[in-house]
Length: 166
Picture 1 (spheres, one colour):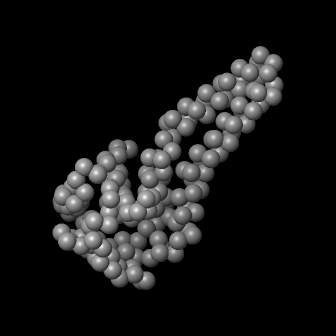
Picture 2: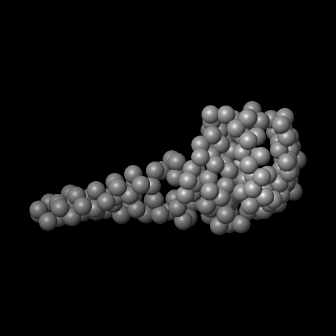
Picture 3: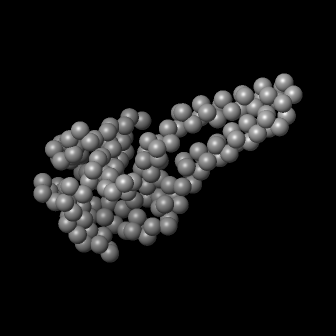
């Protein structure tokens, strides 16, 4: 099964955020930010000015880092890596993945990929420690070819697949 695509900056940023959400756990991070804010406000109220301001500053720093991870880092990744702006041609076979861009022409063994994340708009195929290939769902011509790809992923990666909703 063959797919051809070129990432848009927004599309790649959404996929990168899907990757970062697993590492950052935004819900937990927002809870920590809220606790810091409320603790800081309480400490200010009770007269503990320096500790209260420290907690408020920590909340602001954490919120800024989380916002950067969501709205700056994924775009930075896209714009600093020229290969992400090239057209991709991938042919998924049962034995190998044929990978072609303007600068790369290779055959990859399925064993290179260690796990996969299936998101609402993307597939992330992980190789190495934290490196991943993004395959947009829109690259598949129809739902049946997307389903066939997921079946191939299950065959090749088995229990190493994670499905993410929303």
